Length: 157
Length: 157
DNA sequence: TATTGTTATACTCTATAACTATA
DNA sequence: TATAGTTATAGAGTATAACAATA
Image (cartoon, rainbow over all chains, first blue to last red; front, side, top):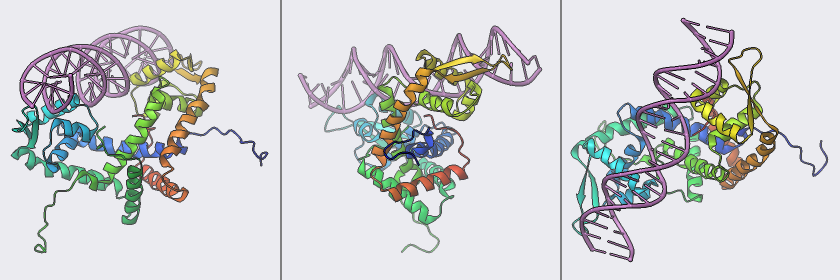
Protein backbone atom coordinates (compact mmCIF):
# COMPACT_ATOMS: atom_id res chain seq x y z
CA UNK A 1 0.00 0.00 0.00
CA UNK A 2 1.09 3.56 -0.63
CA UNK A 3 1.36 6.12 2.15
CA UNK A 4 -1.88 7.37 3.51
CA UNK A 5 -2.91 10.55 1.74
CA UNK A 6 -0.42 10.01 -1.05
CA UNK A 7 -2.54 9.19 -4.08
CA UNK A 8 -0.77 7.16 -6.69
CA UNK A 9 -1.16 8.59 -10.16
CA UNK A 10 -2.34 5.86 -12.44
CA UNK A 11 -2.77 6.36 -16.13
CA UNK A 12 -6.47 5.92 -16.64
CA UNK A 13 -8.07 5.31 -19.99
CA UNK A 14 -11.23 6.80 -21.33
CA UNK A 15 -13.13 3.71 -20.29
CA UNK A 16 -13.31 4.71 -16.65
CA UNK A 17 -15.90 7.27 -17.64
CA UNK A 18 -19.53 6.26 -17.71
CA UNK A 19 -19.97 9.02 -20.25
CA UNK A 20 -17.56 7.17 -22.48
CA UNK A 21 -19.61 3.98 -22.43
CA UNK A 22 -22.80 5.86 -22.86
CA UNK A 23 -21.44 7.58 -25.94
CA UNK A 24 -19.94 4.39 -27.30
CA UNK A 25 -23.20 2.48 -27.11
CA UNK A 26 -25.46 5.38 -28.04
CA UNK A 27 -23.38 6.20 -31.12
CA UNK A 28 -23.78 2.67 -32.37
CA UNK A 29 -27.55 2.58 -31.95
CA UNK A 30 -27.94 6.01 -33.46
CA UNK A 31 -25.65 5.53 -36.40
CA UNK A 32 -27.27 2.23 -37.28
CA UNK A 33 -30.64 3.91 -37.15
CA UNK A 34 -29.41 6.89 -39.15
CA UNK A 35 -28.16 4.53 -41.82
CA UNK A 36 -31.55 2.83 -42.02
CA UNK A 37 -33.22 6.19 -42.46
CA UNK A 38 -30.61 7.27 -44.99
CA UNK A 39 -31.57 4.37 -47.21
CA UNK A 40 -34.89 6.14 -47.49
CA UNK A 41 -33.24 9.54 -48.06
CA UNK A 42 -34.30 10.67 -44.60
CA UNK A 43 -32.27 12.42 -41.92
CA UNK A 44 -32.76 11.86 -38.20
CA UNK A 45 -33.84 15.47 -37.80
CA UNK A 46 -36.57 14.94 -40.41
CA UNK A 47 -37.74 11.81 -38.62
CA UNK A 48 -37.88 13.53 -35.24
CA UNK A 49 -39.69 16.53 -36.69
CA UNK A 50 -42.20 14.28 -38.39
CA UNK A 51 -42.97 12.55 -35.11
CA UNK A 52 -43.27 15.80 -33.29
CA UNK A 53 -45.66 17.15 -35.91
CA UNK A 54 -47.80 14.06 -35.55
CA UNK A 55 -48.07 14.21 -31.81
CA UNK A 56 -48.18 17.88 -30.90
CA UNK A 57 -50.88 20.36 -31.83
CA UNK A 58 -50.42 23.78 -33.38
CA UNK A 59 -46.88 22.98 -34.43
CA UNK A 60 -44.98 25.94 -35.82
CA UNK A 61 -41.35 26.27 -36.89
CA UNK A 62 -40.71 28.12 -33.63
CA UNK A 63 -42.21 25.43 -31.38
CA UNK A 64 -40.34 22.76 -33.33
CA UNK A 65 -37.10 24.68 -32.94
CA UNK A 66 -37.62 24.82 -29.19
CA UNK A 67 -38.57 21.17 -28.90
CA UNK A 68 -35.70 19.95 -31.01
CA UNK A 69 -33.03 22.30 -29.73
CA UNK A 70 -32.29 23.73 -33.14
CA UNK A 71 -32.40 27.24 -34.56
CA UNK A 72 -35.34 28.39 -36.63
CA UNK A 73 -33.13 28.64 -39.66
CA UNK A 74 -32.14 25.02 -39.34
CA UNK A 75 -35.75 23.94 -38.77
CA UNK A 76 -36.82 25.85 -41.84
CA UNK A 77 -34.54 23.70 -43.97
CA UNK A 78 -35.72 20.48 -42.36
CA UNK A 79 -39.31 21.48 -43.10
CA UNK A 80 -38.34 22.31 -46.68
CA UNK A 81 -37.19 18.75 -47.14
CA UNK A 82 -40.31 17.25 -45.60
CA UNK A 83 -42.42 19.53 -47.77
CA UNK A 84 -40.50 18.45 -50.87
CA UNK A 85 -41.40 14.87 -49.95
CA UNK A 86 -45.00 16.07 -49.68
CA UNK A 87 -45.27 14.74 -46.16
CA UNK A 88 -46.12 18.07 -44.53
CA UNK A 89 -47.73 21.37 -45.46
CA UNK A 90 -47.32 24.87 -44.10
CA UNK A 91 -50.37 27.05 -43.78
CA UNK A 92 -50.58 30.59 -42.49
CA UNK A 93 -52.34 30.94 -39.16
CA UNK A 94 -55.57 32.92 -39.31
CA UNK A 95 -54.95 34.55 -35.96
CA UNK A 96 -51.49 35.81 -36.81
CA UNK A 97 -50.35 36.01 -40.38
CA UNK A 98 -46.71 35.74 -39.33
CA UNK A 99 -47.23 32.23 -37.97
CA UNK A 100 -46.93 29.10 -40.08
CA UNK A 101 -48.82 26.04 -38.91
CA UNK A 102 -47.19 22.79 -39.87
CA UNK A 103 -49.28 19.68 -40.41
CA UNK A 104 -49.00 16.20 -41.89
CA UNK A 105 -50.36 15.43 -45.29
CA UNK A 106 -52.20 12.20 -45.99
CA UNK A 107 -48.99 10.79 -47.44
CA UNK A 108 -47.09 11.87 -44.35
CA UNK A 109 -49.57 10.13 -42.11
CA UNK A 110 -49.31 7.05 -44.26
CA UNK A 111 -45.54 6.82 -44.14
CA UNK A 112 -45.17 7.30 -40.39
CA UNK A 113 -46.00 3.73 -39.33
CA UNK A 114 -43.47 2.43 -41.84
CA UNK A 115 -40.79 4.62 -40.36
CA UNK A 116 -41.86 3.70 -36.84
CA UNK A 117 -41.40 0.06 -37.78
CA UNK A 118 -37.82 0.80 -38.78
CA UNK A 119 -37.23 2.47 -35.44
CA UNK A 120 -38.85 -0.40 -33.56
CA UNK A 121 -36.80 -2.98 -35.39
CA UNK A 122 -33.60 -1.07 -34.80
CA UNK A 123 -34.36 -0.66 -31.12
CA UNK A 124 -35.38 -4.21 -30.37
CA UNK A 125 -32.56 -5.72 -32.40
CA UNK A 126 -30.10 -3.77 -30.35
CA UNK A 127 -31.54 -4.14 -26.87
CA UNK A 128 -32.53 -7.77 -27.17
CA UNK A 129 -29.17 -8.52 -25.63
CA UNK A 130 -30.79 -7.49 -22.35
CA UNK A 131 -33.71 -9.28 -20.75
CA UNK A 132 -36.93 -7.48 -19.86
CA UNK A 133 -35.83 -6.63 -16.32
CA UNK A 134 -32.54 -5.27 -17.46
CA UNK A 135 -34.18 -3.18 -20.12
CA UNK A 136 -36.52 -1.77 -17.50
CA UNK A 137 -33.59 -0.98 -15.25
CA UNK A 138 -31.71 0.75 -18.03
CA UNK A 139 -34.77 2.76 -18.90
CA UNK A 140 -35.27 3.75 -15.28
CA UNK A 141 -31.69 4.91 -14.86
CA UNK A 142 -31.73 6.89 -18.10
CA UNK A 143 -35.07 8.45 -17.20
CA UNK A 144 -33.71 9.53 -13.87
CA UNK A 145 -30.65 11.14 -15.43
CA UNK A 146 -32.82 12.92 -17.98
CA UNK A 147 -35.09 14.06 -15.20
CA UNK A 148 -32.41 15.28 -12.82
CA UNK A 149 -30.64 17.20 -15.54
CA UNK A 150 -33.81 18.65 -16.96
CA UNK A 151 -33.16 17.26 -20.40
CA UNK A 152 -36.12 18.40 -22.42
CA UNK A 153 -34.89 18.62 -25.95
CA UNK A 154 -35.54 15.83 -28.36
CA UNK A 155 -32.25 14.34 -29.43
CA UNK A 156 -31.52 15.16 -33.02
CA UNK A 157 -27.87 14.65 -33.70
CA UNK B 1 -61.31 -5.01 -25.24
CA UNK B 2 -60.63 -5.36 -28.93
CA UNK B 3 -61.13 -8.62 -30.74
CA UNK B 4 -58.52 -11.25 -30.13
CA UNK B 5 -55.84 -11.05 -32.78
CA UNK B 6 -56.89 -7.59 -33.86
CA UNK B 7 -54.07 -5.34 -32.76
CA UNK B 8 -55.11 -1.81 -31.97
CA UNK B 9 -52.90 0.76 -33.59
CA UNK B 10 -51.80 3.23 -30.97
CA UNK B 11 -49.77 6.28 -31.80
CA UNK B 12 -46.54 5.77 -29.92
CA UNK B 13 -44.03 8.47 -29.29
CA UNK B 14 -40.31 8.31 -29.69
CA UNK B 15 -39.92 7.79 -25.97
CA UNK B 16 -40.90 4.14 -26.14
CA UNK B 17 -37.50 3.46 -27.62
CA UNK B 18 -34.62 2.80 -25.32
CA UNK B 19 -32.40 4.11 -28.09
CA UNK B 20 -34.22 7.41 -27.77
CA UNK B 21 -33.40 7.76 -24.08
CA UNK B 22 -29.87 6.62 -24.62
CA UNK B 23 -29.37 9.28 -27.28
CA UNK B 24 -31.09 11.94 -25.20
CA UNK B 25 -28.87 11.38 -22.18
CA UNK B 26 -25.71 10.66 -24.11
CA UNK B 27 -26.07 13.79 -26.20
CA UNK B 28 -26.28 15.90 -23.10
CA UNK B 29 -23.18 14.43 -21.47
CA UNK B 30 -21.24 14.63 -24.70
CA UNK B 31 -22.24 18.13 -25.68
CA UNK B 32 -21.44 19.44 -22.22
CA UNK B 33 -18.06 17.79 -22.44
CA UNK B 34 -17.49 19.05 -25.97
CA UNK B 35 -18.20 22.57 -24.79
CA UNK B 36 -15.67 22.24 -21.99
CA UNK B 37 -13.06 21.11 -24.47
CA UNK B 38 -14.02 23.84 -26.90
CA UNK B 39 -13.15 26.45 -24.31
CA UNK B 40 -9.63 25.13 -24.71
CA UNK B 41 -9.85 25.11 -28.50
CA UNK B 42 -9.98 21.33 -28.51
CA UNK B 43 -12.30 19.00 -30.39
CA UNK B 44 -13.50 15.67 -29.05
CA UNK B 45 -11.66 13.88 -31.84
CA UNK B 46 -8.42 15.55 -30.77
CA UNK B 47 -9.02 14.54 -27.17
CA UNK B 48 -9.73 10.93 -28.08
CA UNK B 49 -6.70 10.76 -30.38
CA UNK B 50 -4.48 12.22 -27.68
CA UNK B 51 -5.62 9.57 -25.21
CA UNK B 52 -5.13 6.83 -27.72
CA UNK B 53 -1.62 8.04 -28.51
CA UNK B 54 -0.79 8.03 -24.82
CA UNK B 55 -1.99 4.52 -24.18
CA UNK B 56 -1.21 2.55 -27.31
CA UNK B 57 2.23 1.78 -28.68
CA UNK B 58 3.40 2.26 -32.25
CA UNK B 59 0.51 4.54 -33.07
CA UNK B 60 0.25 5.46 -36.73
CA UNK B 61 -2.40 7.43 -38.60
CA UNK B 62 -3.72 4.12 -39.93
CA UNK B 63 -4.08 2.46 -36.50
CA UNK B 64 -5.70 5.61 -35.16
CA UNK B 65 -8.14 5.68 -38.05
CA UNK B 66 -9.12 2.10 -37.31
CA UNK B 67 -9.44 2.67 -33.58
CA UNK B 68 -11.48 5.82 -33.94
CA UNK B 69 -13.64 4.77 -36.84
CA UNK B 70 -12.52 7.61 -39.07
CA UNK B 71 -10.85 7.77 -42.46
CA UNK B 72 -7.14 8.36 -42.77
CA UNK B 73 -7.79 11.69 -44.39
CA UNK B 74 -9.82 12.85 -41.41
CA UNK B 75 -7.21 11.56 -38.96
CA UNK B 76 -4.52 13.41 -40.86
CA UNK B 77 -6.28 16.68 -40.15
CA UNK B 78 -6.79 15.86 -36.48
CA UNK B 79 -3.09 15.12 -36.17
CA UNK B 80 -2.28 18.39 -37.93
CA UNK B 81 -4.13 20.25 -35.20
CA UNK B 82 -2.44 18.36 -32.39
CA UNK B 83 0.91 18.96 -34.03
CA UNK B 84 0.16 22.68 -34.34
CA UNK B 85 -0.45 22.68 -30.59
CA UNK B 86 2.93 20.96 -30.27
CA UNK B 87 1.38 18.10 -28.31
CA UNK B 88 2.44 15.37 -30.72
CA UNK B 89 5.16 14.70 -33.26
CA UNK B 90 5.26 12.53 -36.35
CA UNK B 91 8.42 10.61 -37.13
CA UNK B 92 9.08 8.29 -40.02
CA UNK B 93 9.41 4.65 -39.06
CA UNK B 94 12.83 3.14 -39.65
CA UNK B 95 11.41 -0.18 -40.73
CA UNK B 96 9.07 1.24 -43.33
CA UNK B 97 9.57 4.72 -44.63
CA UNK B 98 5.92 5.02 -45.58
CA UNK B 99 4.82 4.75 -41.96
CA UNK B 100 4.52 7.72 -39.63
CA UNK B 101 4.85 7.03 -35.91
CA UNK B 102 2.87 9.40 -33.75
CA UNK B 103 4.02 10.20 -30.25
CA UNK B 104 3.36 12.69 -27.47
CA UNK B 105 5.71 15.57 -26.86
CA UNK B 106 6.63 16.62 -23.35
CA UNK B 107 3.99 19.36 -23.56
CA UNK B 108 1.42 16.83 -24.69
CA UNK B 109 2.22 14.59 -21.76
CA UNK B 110 1.96 17.54 -19.44
CA UNK B 111 -1.45 18.67 -20.66
CA UNK B 112 -3.12 15.26 -20.56
CA UNK B 113 -3.84 15.17 -16.81
CA UNK B 114 -5.44 18.59 -17.05
CA UNK B 115 -7.72 17.39 -19.79
CA UNK B 116 -8.44 14.19 -17.89
CA UNK B 117 -9.52 16.30 -14.94
CA UNK B 118 -12.04 18.05 -17.17
CA UNK B 119 -13.39 14.71 -18.28
CA UNK B 120 -13.55 13.42 -14.71
CA UNK B 121 -15.36 16.50 -13.52
CA UNK B 122 -17.83 16.33 -16.36
CA UNK B 123 -18.51 12.68 -15.75
CA UNK B 124 -18.95 12.81 -12.01
CA UNK B 125 -21.07 15.95 -12.11
CA UNK B 126 -23.43 14.22 -14.47
CA UNK B 127 -23.64 10.77 -12.93
CA UNK B 128 -23.73 11.88 -9.31
CA UNK B 129 -27.49 11.71 -9.67
CA UNK B 130 -27.04 7.94 -9.37
CA UNK B 131 -25.63 6.20 -6.31
CA UNK B 132 -22.63 3.88 -6.55
CA UNK B 133 -24.71 0.75 -7.07
CA UNK B 134 -26.75 2.33 -9.79
CA UNK B 135 -23.66 3.60 -11.53
CA UNK B 136 -22.21 0.10 -11.41
CA UNK B 137 -25.42 -1.32 -12.84
CA UNK B 138 -25.48 1.21 -15.66
CA UNK B 139 -21.87 0.47 -16.44
CA UNK B 140 -22.54 -3.26 -16.48
CA UNK B 141 -25.49 -2.95 -18.82
CA UNK B 142 -23.63 -0.65 -21.20
CA UNK B 143 -20.59 -2.92 -21.14
CA UNK B 144 -22.74 -5.86 -22.04
CA UNK B 145 -24.34 -4.05 -24.96
CA UNK B 146 -20.93 -2.94 -26.20
CA UNK B 147 -19.67 -6.48 -25.84
CA UNK B 148 -22.58 -8.23 -27.52
CA UNK B 149 -22.53 -5.85 -30.46
CA UNK B 150 -18.77 -5.94 -30.81
CA UNK B 151 -18.44 -2.22 -30.45
CA UNK B 152 -14.73 -1.61 -30.76
CA UNK B 153 -14.42 1.88 -32.08
CA UNK B 154 -13.74 4.74 -29.76
CA UNK B 155 -16.66 7.13 -29.84
CA UNK B 156 -15.66 10.35 -31.51
CA UNK B 157 -18.75 12.24 -32.50
C1' DT C 1 0.98 -3.21 -58.06
C1' DA C 2 -0.18 -2.42 -53.25
C1' DT C 3 0.12 0.46 -49.23
C1' DT C 4 0.84 4.73 -46.17
C1' DG C 5 -0.16 9.11 -45.56
C1' DT C 6 -1.55 13.74 -47.30
C1' DT C 7 -4.14 16.86 -49.96
C1' DA C 8 -8.06 18.53 -52.87
C1' DT C 9 -12.72 18.60 -53.21
C1' DA C 10 -17.35 18.23 -52.03
C1' DC C 11 -21.13 17.45 -49.01
C1' DT C 12 -24.02 17.62 -44.81
C1' DC C 13 -25.42 19.86 -40.99
C1' DT C 14 -25.88 23.68 -38.30
C1' DA C 15 -25.38 28.46 -36.47
C1' DT C 16 -25.32 33.52 -37.14
C1' DA C 17 -27.08 37.22 -39.05
C1' DA C 18 -29.47 39.83 -42.60
C1' DC C 19 -33.92 40.25 -44.42
C1' DT C 20 -39.26 40.24 -45.31
C1' DA C 21 -43.72 40.43 -43.71
C1' DT C 22 -46.68 41.15 -40.07
C1' DA C 23 -47.98 42.72 -35.48
C1' DT D 1 -40.18 48.18 -32.33
C1' DA D 2 -40.81 43.35 -31.77
C1' DT D 3 -41.72 38.81 -33.61
C1' DA D 4 -42.21 34.67 -37.04
C1' DG D 5 -40.15 32.79 -40.54
C1' DT D 6 -36.88 32.50 -44.46
C1' DT D 7 -32.65 33.08 -46.77
C1' DA D 8 -27.62 34.04 -47.27
C1' DT D 9 -23.37 33.06 -45.59
C1' DA D 10 -19.94 30.77 -43.15
C1' DG D 11 -17.81 27.19 -40.40
C1' DA D 12 -17.02 22.54 -38.53
C1' DG D 13 -16.46 17.96 -39.50
C1' DT D 14 -16.06 14.20 -42.38
C1' DA D 15 -15.94 11.24 -46.61
C1' DT D 16 -14.24 10.31 -51.34
C1' DA D 17 -10.93 10.37 -54.45
C1' DA D 18 -6.63 11.94 -56.49
C1' DC D 19 -1.92 12.01 -55.40
C1' DA D 20 3.21 11.27 -53.87
C1' DA D 21 6.41 8.36 -51.79
C1' DT D 22 7.71 3.91 -50.65
C1' DA D 23 7.37 -1.09 -50.60
